[in-house]
Image 1 (cartoon, rainbow, N blue to C red):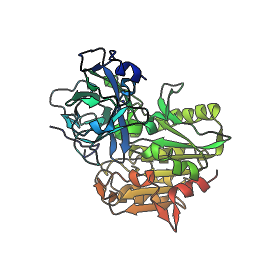
Image 2: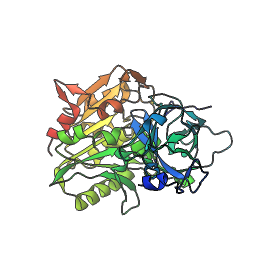
Image 3: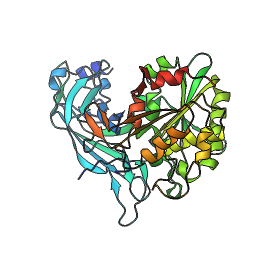
Image 4: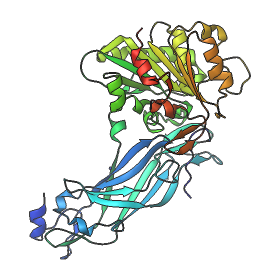
Length: 416
């Protein structure tokens, strides 16, 4: 049974075909057969996490295909998704699945490849690329195996029916995620980087939530979940955000555990990454911004206490400043909050049952001089209601606004 719960609630051979020559991966009326046709998994990161939304078959070399021979029932798509690391007895991973994906459309690209569009939506069971391991509090990239079966022949425009004998899965393709290059800092912390072009550009530092850190005891440190679990970093690389910031680099470090476990130790490692990016890219030192959600909301605030003159603005989202359970020593003492001089805009939702917004976001807002705050009643986007903790969705969509000024525009105006 497929279950999808996210954290804390847890991929020009026409003449040959006409002549009846054997083409790779196809069985013709004459019975010729060779190697398989490859396909890629096409994915998109939705607000609730990445899903496989289509598969693209490398059929261009078969020759011109008659689009009238393609229907939603020409191919069957079966998908399995399993944990990449062994699970302890009794442990639970959410979002594994073994099911048939519904094909909603079948079409040809201009180049002659077949695209099978798959049913997908926020909260829909099956199709996700991440699983959440309950005992570790971590999202992991699932091992995906897609099996394609052709159930009816397709026709070439010259009349030959074609049945593809075998399909070979290739890589997962997500253009937004793939636009971020992979890097490892001098101290060994992994990070992803979206690079803007032109002269000196702002740098936006995105700090992920607790579910997207590494699980080093399992040898799991993928540098992937930071961009696939939500749109936090991706939002700042969209055309709209790049227009507002007039081009901006976006860096997303990945914690080796969770930021809150040792914020003071992680701070210099994040600072090291900022320095590395500034040396390799044209970065405007007066326009470095930090934003983060949950664990990363805490870390965004922590960075402004450790480096008070580094950032032009900070956007902590549903972050923890007291303690996760509301008792014990605060993660960021009141004395540090009152000393923050970085322009700060805090965001949370009143129905957050993971991090108490009153004891954390509201409390920080009351102490940070000149800070701004947007407090939502709940988290709803495009008609879908998400858990109250997921208020980062609003920032990733540039929704928070005060007196007509939206949060990205406010950030872009700040200078150190």
